[in-house]
Image (cartoon, rainbow, N blue to C red; front, side, top):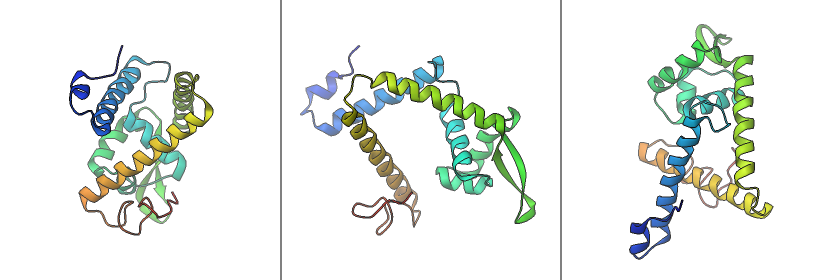
Length: 179
């Protein structure tokens, strides 16, 4: 199956037209792999990112999770409900304010995250197995850079000061990214 769009090649074929098309194909194929199980587990993107955030940064309240993921608190509340019901995330008392609750990754959630992460890593290894190591590293670096640009763009569109992409902030060209 080819990934070249006739419309993309019939125009002047700027790299940006080809790139946006390839990104659309990538998003579709990622969803197809996720929906089919594809050997990588069945956590959807939102669940994966929430569990990963809790593992990397520890327990957090809904507002902090929402800010770190760039979504509304109501979205996090909806997304975390099935994770709590499945025992992947638990509610713990906030040590700074006993009235407040934080969300924390459970041992079951950590195990599930490891299982899905390992499956995704194995799939990625298979997909790039015939690429030279330097191309694998370059692809990862460029994809990371592209994701940071998307994060900055989103923050700029939402008018969030202090986010990457704001002048003098990490993620801005020429500024170190210390994330």
